[in-house]
Image (cartoon, rainbow, N blue to C red; front, side, top):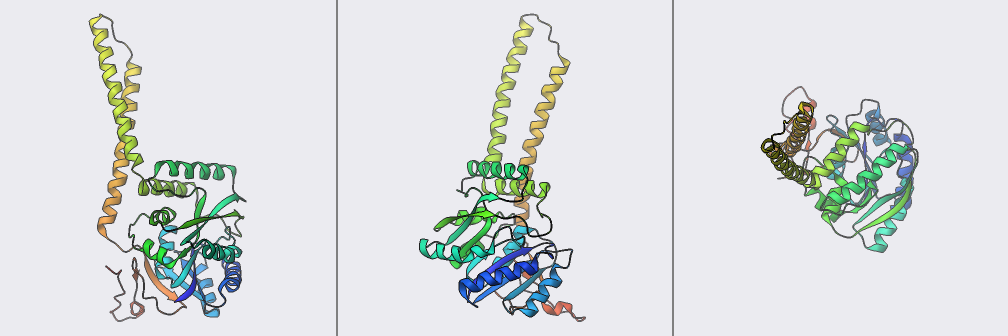
Length: 339
């Protein structure tokens, strides 16, 4: 088994990959010598990222390049890399170099000294990000902390170092909608923070626009909390109480002989009630949709091909397409997840 695996999900990161490889190789060499692997996952990139990865794998035996069959999303691409890596310790890092690779030796030392299974990065500052992004991130982590039953660390992303036993526990969780930083917090073991200053993106543009950020936040809330359903219950309770008071008022006005006017206020009540009912139905639909996706039991990812690093046989959660699928004759069956 390799001493260290560095897992990097990549989507349209052509401009970062050469510098990423240089800095990660230097940091890994300083930390563990030559006994490491750099696992790059191409998550359906539309630029030349896969070609660059293949070139790196051809020139450096430490590089393992994994090409997914399509864009699966950051969390599933990361899951593929974690599922297929072979290290005793695993570093998760993004390709944009906002999380400095040079922190690896210090994180390994922290893991040894603290006898920890997880060392997670906590952002002291976030260089190069807008005030809106910093404010929404600050609010999101605190809302998540209050809403979930799991103690998810504040201001911590996916940048972390894990032991093999912590990773094996994580890989025993096969759910489709994945919020990995929350799942890592859920597994327990000894987890310690590692404070650092986040840097600006090395090149390119962020792959998390507002729409994806909102989807990610909703995945986190619904994946680790029943608070949205409780919110719907509380809203229904208060609306029911308000309806009783309204009925009492109408009865009093009728007995007192007052003419009840106010078509506008009546329509306002109808619209508000209708909007809340639709909101509650949407929440229920979201949870039911998740149950539907889980019931289908599809592989979490599909690997089209692997460059470098030899054959990968230890995947549990995905599907590795057989190389014979490239031939004219049939017979490529691939390998499904271990049941």
